[in-house]
Amino acid sequence: MARLLLLSLSPIASDPRVMRQYGALKDEHEVHVLGFGERPPGVLHFTSVEQTRADRKGVLRNALRLAFRRYDAYYWQHPQIRALEKSAAQLPAGFDMVLANDVMALPMALRLAGNAPVWLDAHEYAPREFEDLWAWRTLLGPFFDATCRDALPRVARMSTVCTGIAREYERCYGVPVSVMPNCPEPERLPVRPTHAERIRLIHHGAAIASRKIEVMIDLMDHLDDRFSLDLMLMEQDPAYLATLKQRAARHSRIRFIPPVPMRDIAAHTNGYDIGLFLLPPTNFNYLHALPNKFFEFMQARLAIAIGPSPEMQALVTELGCGVVSGSFEAADLAAHLARLTPQDIDAMKRASDSASQRFNAAATRQWLRDEVRGLLADRACPVH
Image 1 (spheres, one colour):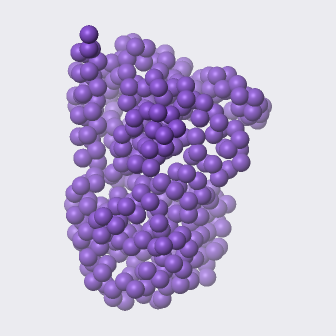
Image 2 (tube, one colour):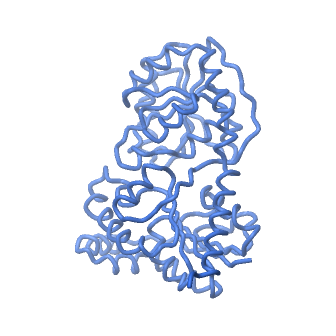
Image 3 (cartoon, helix red, strand yellow):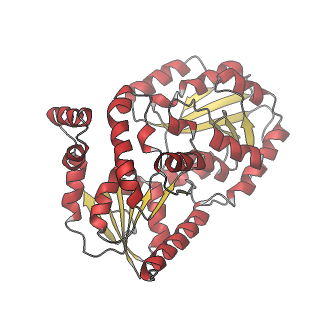
């Protein structure tokens, strides 16, 4: 049994990707988890990191460090990294592998690993994650680019959420990258028949302005009375959510419903007909989005309606589980939806049912378990 460190600058208990990593590795290894928040249920070895934020002067100092390319000072003086370092002093010595989540955690992971291999699960493409924002393009983007150039050649393995992001890391930094999609737990749910006079659409996720959720609200301007839309949104930006509610007020067929825990999403949405996600590509990661909700639509046995986002489009086309519009315009996707018959939607639901057997956390857990086993075996048996 190897001793592993699982590291993430996130509230671990509410981070499904990190918890799935823990679930994959805990039975074969002694896994120590380091991150924010309370101890997640079932995690034996957990060290909490204090959640701290820079005050106004600290924010200014950080901005100046970034502006003058003083990246080491920015990183190691960052409040989160200093809190992480303080908590890491409580960890036992001698890990056989460190699994770091996101590029921001990578320099610390390399320091904590010593001579042990580091696996970076980068999730998204860090240098261009919010490139639609000026501050990101001028300050944080160059920092993450410099961090990747320095640190990525020193990782033993690397993964991310989809093919497009993996290829961009490979192209820019010359490192091999595996794909581990964001698949939820498998669910045993029925395929429910679609009613001809009542077609229910659902979108769920965070209310983030750069996602342009208002476009999905405008979709209802172009659909007849058969269609209704429920929005199950987590409030990350109260002002933006208020704007969305005001925009939707003209439609009696749009409702805002309370969010449910992630583990309950598929069961809660199984009674809908179509999972909706029209995501204009305002930045690189949105262009290559392949999010949790896409696979949760499958587990809920829903037809899927999207714009031409290449990662999602490839799977919808391959699997036959939904419709893809030719653009990210609301009217374009509405035209595709208006042509669907209940029989068409039911066929797509059945295709999602089949896909749910393939795209779920059980499959990704087994893949990660096998890959970590192989990495540790390679380390134990070096080539002479």
